Image: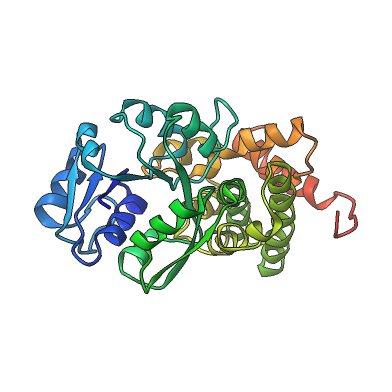
Length: 326
C-alpha cells in the first residue's frame, strides 16, 4: 500500500516518516515550495521539523495530481482547509485517513462528515491520540487511536502504519475519536491561560478534570462512546496538550495569560492553533444542543474579545458549585 500524506507541516511530515519506515516509498504533498525542496534535497523539513533527518524514501511534491499514484491518503491539512484540498485532489475512491483535529466552522460538522460530503465514495478513517510531531518523527514511543467503521479496512491500515514505537489501537467509534481531538484543543487553550496567569497546578488539574467532563457530555451527544473518550484520542490527548508548551494551543493560552493581545497572537502564528478556530463553533453547537460546556464557552468569549481575562476568571470562579456527576 503506497501512502500519500497531504500536508507538509510538522505532523504531516512525522506521519510520512512513520509511513516510510522500512524503506517504503511515501509521497508527501506540501503547499510550501521550500518544504518540498528541503525534503527532497536535504531529507529534512527545515521549516517545521528542523534538525530531524527524514527517510530518503519520502518524496515531496507541491502538485496534488501526483497523489493519484497512491493507494490511500493520510490527510493532515488544517481542519478549516481540508474541504478545499480534497475538492482539488485527484478523484478516486481510495481510503482517506483524517488526522486534523477540529470541527469545520462553516458547517459545524465533524471532519469525517465533511470528507463523506466532498468524497462520497471514499472509505474514511480517523487517526488521533496524544502525539507531538517531533517525538513521533524521532521514533519515540507513541500510541494512537485509528477509528474506522469498516473494521477490515481499519485492520489493513493498522498493518500498514503500526510500528514498535507507533502502537495503533483500532476502534469503530469515528465520532468519539474526532470529538476528543477537537475538544481537547479548546481545553488546552484554557490550561495555557492558567499557566500564563500563574494560577497553580491545583487549578490546572481541576480544569483538566472538569474539561474532560465537558468532552464526555459533548461526545455522547455527537454519538461517540464514553470508553473512546476515556482512551487515547480523548483523555490521553487532553492530558498531553494541557501540560506542555509543545502544544500550540497551550502556548497560545499561556501567552494570553501572560497579558499578550489575542489578535496579535493569532495574526503572528505561522502554525495553526486549531483551538482558536474550534472554540466558536464548538460553543455554538453546545448552546444549540443545550450541552453544558462552561469552560469551552469561556475560551470562546476570551478568544472573541468579548470579555477581559480578569473579568472572565472572576465570572468562572464565582459559578455556584454543583454535583460532580453533572
